Length: 116
Image 1 (cartoon, rainbow, N blue to C red):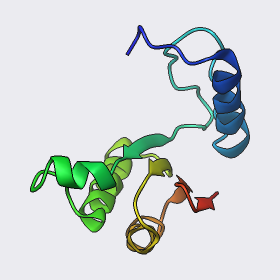
Image 2: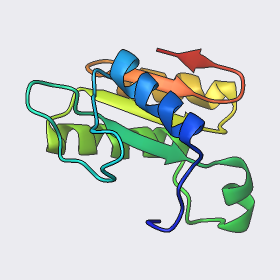
Image 3: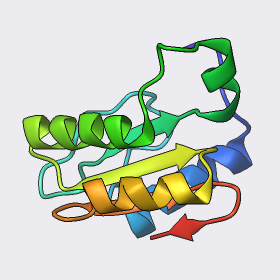
Image 4: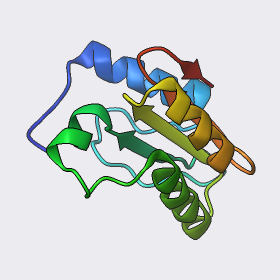
């Protein structure tokens, strides 16, 4: 949301992560920025699992199904990197890794695993 702005120190951490891990260098303080030429493009996914599985039964895809949707979007956009933030359990993450990592660079963060 445009009305929601995170604290400066959190935004700074995000910019640093994107620059160092994803090779992306947004213009600080400009809000939404266009993709820069010369690389750095990535797909960002916030994949909620635990509470959504109960709140929206039948609507949420399996982890493998979500991984396949991510893979299709990466192919459509011709992007090689994906950043995924999730609360999925570790066994589900392994399935996702198998489905997505074959041809793409995966940056995954959840409460127990950080894969860069």
